[in-house]
Length: 140
Image (cartoon, rainbow, N blue to C red; front, side, top):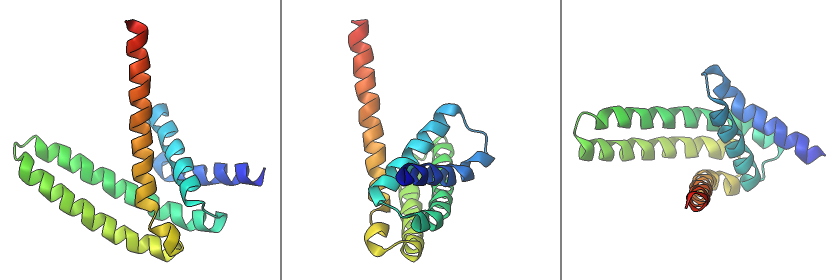
């Protein structure tokens, strides 16, 4: 029971920063699933989660901003330069935030943050692919 309350509290903390901007229900569910996945992967205590989620939410906002800037810049026609610049900025962002994660999490958990985020993305892509395949099979 404590675990369920803790997970729900972590999801609330993680998604509360996103409540400022209008989001679709699907986006909210996705963010909640991501928070639960990362929380489970890192096995965060309640104290760790309380310190971690505000830092992670800031990282997410900055990361999303970079992605939006890349999309806008790609429309200018300089895709190669834009992509290199994006990768460089994203790497700088991750370096900066990895230092912040070390301040709020034990090192063993801090080094897993970006891997947990990648794992979530890979699982999501796999699940969407499976759903798409099932949908195609039904139509055939």
